[in-house]
Image (cartoon, rainbow, N blue to C red; front, side):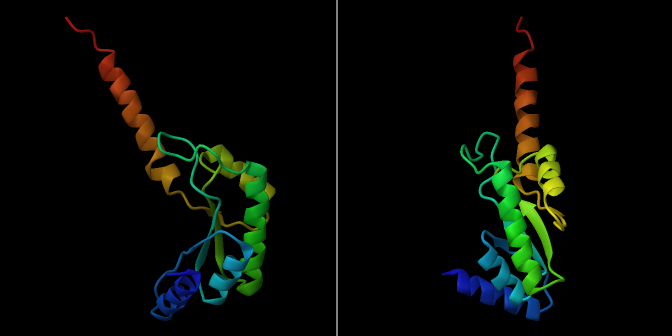
Length: 138
């Protein structure tokens, strides 16, 4: 176990012509993964906020902007061809993504995860349960 083994795994997977998309939390991790040949770096800002099981505490969107940019800069310096996506923490909704992308340079997009597969489902289920509860009993 350890980050060095993850870097080795990305290098091995890249050598097998697999698409590689590691999560990175720091500029140093971004550099190491980019040097190992990662195709995509996911600049991870922590557990996604919001919803019933989301993080209750997260960094601010402004801190996410700064961290994402530092990760991008380190990854691109090591490998100009790497794709860098923002993800997690306070970046949970489309407006959050717009905020981060409008304040960073070069970020290639957003990696959805919980924002795509968990949050919309939680909202839909909650609303459906409310609708059923609103049906009057005779």
